[in-house]
Length: 141
Length: 135
Image 1 (tube, rainbow over the protein chains, first blue to last red):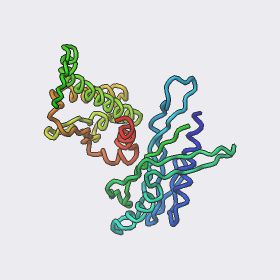
Image 2 (cartoon, rainbow over the protein chains, first blue to last red):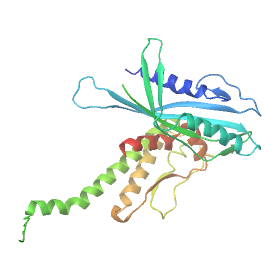
Image 3 (cartoon, rainbow over the protein chains, first blue to last red):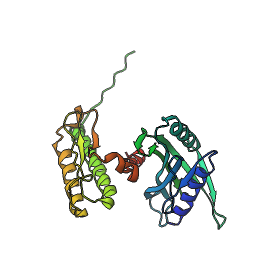
Image 4 (cartoon, each protein chain N blue to C red):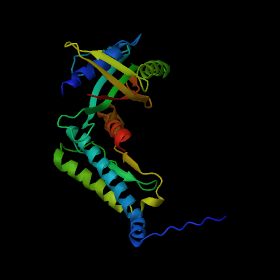
């Protein structure tokens, strides 16, 4: 059931958009013009593996996993604290062992589990200062 | 009262024990080949000059990592550069003689633009994501 990717993406993106005080989100392949001086968050869904979870079954349950890459961009020359605070909020919302539930239009509910959420060092690329965050997710379906 | 036990080992068992270092070496080496393949596979779709994909290296603590700049390089053949990148990593692995005294191995990419590439394509993040479960 490869269409599960749509639901996984929706689950993760809706979790991100529901974080309080989250700035505008730049989703993949959606026109977005960042406004200089205003923070925004870039979101990218990266599946890595789809493997049978069991052996011997003709139609086995699959384990899907991947990375949800989230990158808060904050204006340069403001110091790291704005980006750090935003990163902390995102990591806390995707804390390890968190289960994220999502119900699609066919009334099917999936639960995406979070394996880890970690950030890297901040990086200056004028006019932005950004912090890459990698969220490892998985689901058995 | 004394109790004595005697365990007798046969030659086949001793031979198998003797093969353990070789088996461990082979397991580690194959795992590294998998990681090399994964790094190249995830990098291949966005090859332009080929500088990034040929800048991977496996190092123990010593040794200068590979790192090529993309400036001044023409657009490259994606498959050819991926082949070169993979060949280099395989050579790195084969150069390591004995894993038993190596506490750490590093997969590095020392291209000057490696960090912006990571931001956009998360190559190392994907490798790590797979290794968390299958490593």
